Image 1 (spheres, protein in one colour):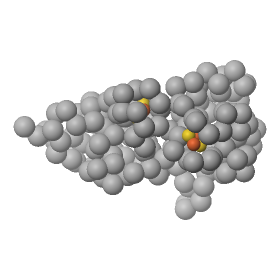
Image 2 (image 1 turned 45 degrees about the vertical axis):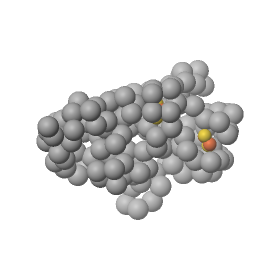
Image 3 (image 1 turned 90 degrees about the vertical axis):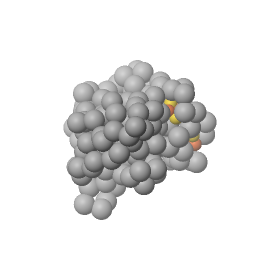
Image 4 (image 1 turned 90 degrees about the horizontal axis):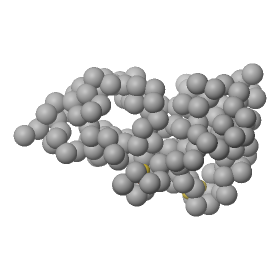
Length: 155
Ligand code: FES
Ligand code: FES
């Protein structure tokens, strides 16, 4: 039997009827059409599906939609400010931290959480924070540099 999930996604309130086993990732991508959040492994190994749930970086493939009832979700689609890339997104572009781009939305959400809690992270902080987000393309260094640059810009 379907249940109604009420949640706010990128500042917009939604009510969605879902099967109890539906994941938050499926709700976002298939019910709300927010395909910025990616499905990589689907089993909690890659971080491609990372969103912020009540401000906490969360693997949406491992989270049931009903667990997000009453919650606030932020996805990559919500990062741009007044139609422009925010400083973190722009730093990823400027530093070549995006190649295929599949990991990027999840990386951005993890980095967003990090920069809120630790506005001036050192390299170790950044590498620890993104350790759950796999990237097959960049070798991570450019991602680390992009996050450092975004932090510096806001200091
Ligand atoms: S798709 Fe969720 S961790 Fe890989
Ligand atoms: S840019 Fe391709 S997986 Fe990270």
